[in-house]
Image (cartoon, rainbow, N blue to C red; front, side):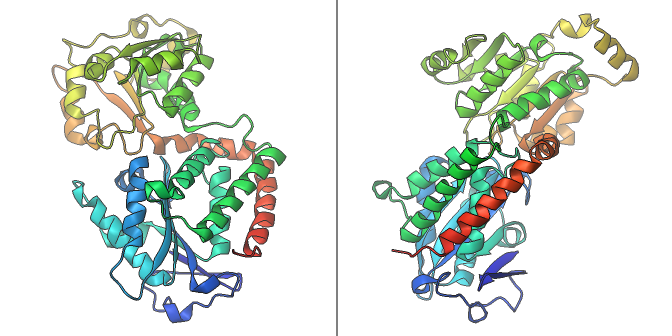
Length: 432
């Protein structure tokens, strides 16, 4: 769907609708200075599953490379003068300034489709048309970006991490030494965005005590382990975290709140992990190198993969090796659990428990999609295994999102008022 705005009114049409053409879009001077239009093209957790989002995701090093591709065109009727890319776990968005929105959208889809050709199942232009949402015009683009950066459009309402992600993407886009493609119109947009988010954080309680993807993952795991593993408490499980980045740090902090005392961490840098250890004094972080991943999983009940790897690092073959009876060491708590919650649960649920709980909070996914295939499941449930895996990714965390929204309903209203005020200031601001 495309949203195009003229004189502060927006209409929605399918891209291929004949009503949508360059001659049909009229912009006032505020919205279209010097013939240039701000356009947002993107996809989020609301529009598509992680299987599509992970194919579009780009690393920090690739952000300006993609922006350069977007601003490079042989079409003499098309000029994209500015570009910026935002890529996170839950969204992939492109912001451009162009003289021709219709041709720009088609150009963006062509570039993105070509970039995914290296994947086993590339994304077609038709799929991009059906999945990605487009906003044309500075007012609605600003309204959207203000909401995103404030955490109002996040899978976890009010989470503060998205502000840092937007800031980081913006710093990269405006860095000319790194071939950044942001110019004056995007500068005005993102300056207003950061100002608006600052107001929301200081004038409302939206982000105070809010959850993050990592904290939600820990809460999700805690709520599922009795059903999945037959173990009542996180503190009684053997936990492995794969990675040592920002999400891993937040995992450690939240696991500490659940009285977890030991965590196996599989990562490249032992020195970096020693620095992180100072932040979580109540947990002992046990380092293992990446080539010990199979061993780490074979000795774990719960695994949180959260690396920035472009390709899956936990494959069906690796899991079959890790869970082979000759390699697997089961948690004795499973067989010795005698608490009332265990007895009650076991009496009401005779289903076979899983051997392993995987909660993948990475995009692209660290756990191969074939782990959910019927072939893998049938192989794992047959001799000599007779096991199963409870496999989750970021999309499964939406279960807790509704609860978070209800708790922060009043704060959302206040945040929306601030956004409305700041959007009006932004569209009336003179461009330099």
